[in-house]
Length: 315
Image (cartoon, rainbow, N blue to C red; front, top):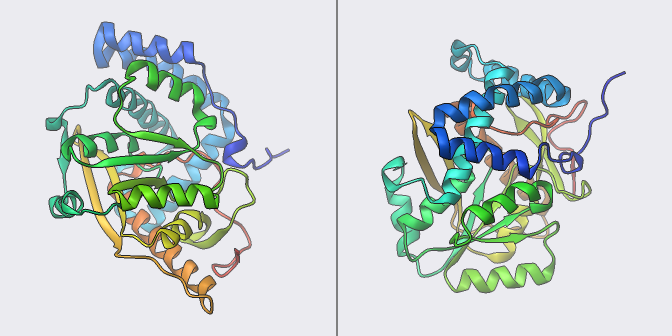
């Protein structure tokens, strides 16, 4: 019998805080190569025991290679995908420990970073599960005057976040736990943006309660559900919207920042169509960056829909 397709938020986090601390200790004692030696059996265990994650990885890689044949030249497979996730796990820890330095980061779009740095008003920065979003702290360090609030679903990874706080209690980014964006939340965020702060939110996973608004759009050659929430929130806040991707390429982090819209707005008459178009535009940009770093989209959950068309959405 096939495994039931669970919503990503309902899948418990794997591993334990003790295990994560052990891996961190290995790194401190023996460096990255020692970490990799211990990581090999750990990743192998999860690869062998997480059938649904393997299937999700295989589906993603197949669709990516069909859409971008050049990616197929590397012979991408789920084992490589899992291993890449383990490597990024260490990098996430290093970011919060303050071990990622300026020389480790390359800013691919310096003009966009200059624009953000010089703006007196804040905005919304859309991120994804592609690459290492924790390197957003590199953005904060590069631009000392910038202030960031990152919206996170910390319940899903509370052990990892607990370790983050222990490794660096002085982290400069404010994490705000959310499950739904309420009017009160929007009001708080609006005040922060008016004060020059940037709100960071992931835009590539459906709502944690599984009942929120989504749009089914084209993504890597098939129909997939993307959340509308980040775009609706950006419309309510009436502020500039940026896309931020941090990809590890040639052992350095490459940060890509681009303006998605000077302001997102939806009118009542064509609201559904406008939201659909906005989400589709985002999905196409995510496709582009997945092509640049094929093994760094860490969404090990069933993502694509079956038997749906792109105009099917819940509004």
